[in-house]
Image (tube, rainbow, N blue to C red):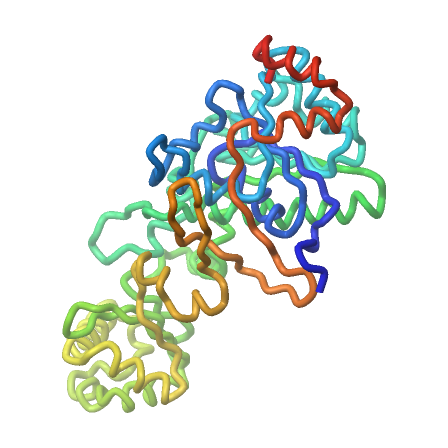
Amino acid sequence: MSGSLGPLNGIRVVACSTAQAGTVPYMLMADLGAEVIKIESPNGGDPSRKAGEIKGENGEISSFFETNNRGVKSLTLNLKTPEAREILHKLVKTADIFGQNFRPGAAERNGFGYEDLKKINPKLVYASVSAYGTRGPHANLPGTDAVGQALSGIAEAYSQPGGSMRTGVVSVADETCAMLTFGGVLAALINARETGIGQKVETSLAGSAVRLMGWTLTTTMWRNKNPITGARINGTRNRPGIAATFDDIDGLPLVLQLDAKDWQPAMNALGFWDTLEQRGASDLGLALVDENKKDLILETLRGLFAKGRRDDMLITLREADIVAAPVNTLLEASNDADNIANGYIAEMEYPEIGDTLKVHGTPWQFSETPPVFGRAPKLGEHNQAILEELGYSAEAIQNFVDQKII
């Protein structure tokens, strides 16, 4: 194993980006060994430094900023000054990847649009994240995670019959966009190394969240009909399947997913089959063609599950080789034995507050180049080291400080 050198060791990323979708792609690259230089305003830096849960007497640590920027370097530049833009351009000349998620048009106005930077570095992979995408009627509008969720149909995925649709508390559009940006940028980087030609990679909150809807969206389009809500009943009349969540006697939820072949065995294992037959609710396929039957089947299942205890039912289902799991709250997920054992949840020491805190681990396991993640940087923490590498003297760096260029 190569110790702390991750699979992206040797890759340099320069990112003029904030918030979540614009930072997480490069945080993931930093986890995998890339050098990521985050450009921040000297006046306070990324506003998300003060977002989320704040720890420390002076508010030194932010759950939002720490999660999205760990392992990166911070360089402060006032990009409204020509000196700062010159520094940025020198950095870009040494970079493999550049990222930004400014409102459309802002990068161009500030001298770091794609056309500007590819003249400096033709091999550069340039990532641009927007809210709506760049070609539609709302391309110039700003947006957040809520916009991506709202436009993509995510709200319907968790809606209940007769209830209003709501966007969720977790930033799934931001995170999905980040992961697709991560993959797209690395694909473009492979191509740039083969051809010597970089390119612009554009992703959006809306487009990423639409992809997250997967085959369910395709089925909806082919049927020209919204899916059944409250449970995912799919397949055909003769070969139906179900994925649904039910509460136990204590109100604790569990989820199970059954193919057509699993339906009767699962119901028999739980002792539900006779009751389903007596109530005319044993033919799951009827839920796909008859709204009343769908309601009857789901109502009967809800009543049956509400008489048992979650742990007992999970043991029964799993022993019958049926896909089933407890439905975790966020706090429960952070304590889940599998999540901890696989390193999806980790711990990090924070000496400045005298505490160890739980943090995101890593979703990857590499046999030879394991990810190694660090802390988020203090604002401007790497100013001197980066500028010295670019050839600036100590006197010049102090002059930048005095003129508020960095």
